[in-house]
Length: 256
Image 1 (cartoon, helix red, strand yellow):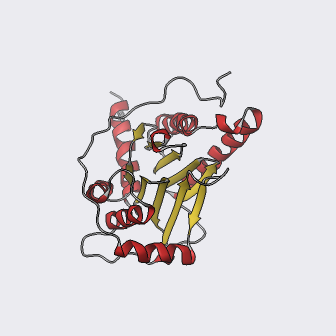
Image 2 (spheres, one colour; image 1 turned 90 degrees about the vertical axis):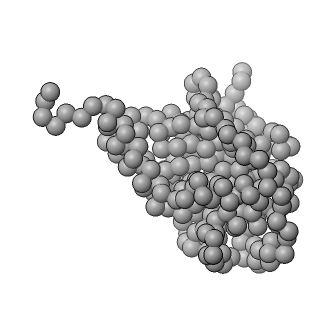
């Protein structure tokens, strides 16, 4: 055996450990369905560097980890959406197609590069009804999870997800969904971040054309004030969601 030899299996384990440690240093982000769409909430004191963004008409993006890496993925997703929307039709740009693209990019980087991306991302698409909503969570190695209802990622993701499940139920009004998200993102005994240190956005199915709406300023402060008065919803049973992988090649944005 040559000096310094490391088996491929050990290399993959080392890369995965490296990526997980980088992601765990970041603050959590939660994404959950509510009565009229999909809600994104993240503690983020920066007003310039966003963890939550719009990708296309009905599609939102959230990420944790190294900013320059998930920003490159976000910009690549926007270019993909713009090109396919221009060449085919805007309705042909889907979260599934973006998840497929990101899975291939992240998987290739994890396999071929010395350093993996230290990121975890969510691509969400709001439909005409909650049954038509799609939430895909992608990890640093290109694995794809087709989520239902809620997602938590970043540092302390398991604890955040457990607290979120205590308050979450299907069809929550926006105020109660925001209350559930803040409950999940706040450690027991800790203080909730003020409105100025929160990044909040929705994909609202009732909006015309562009569904993404960033909530900030007085509007967010009113929602936060209402959320403190909202009753805690009854908990729902946990459901295990197995990992899935996108099928076939990269979505070209058209079925024809």
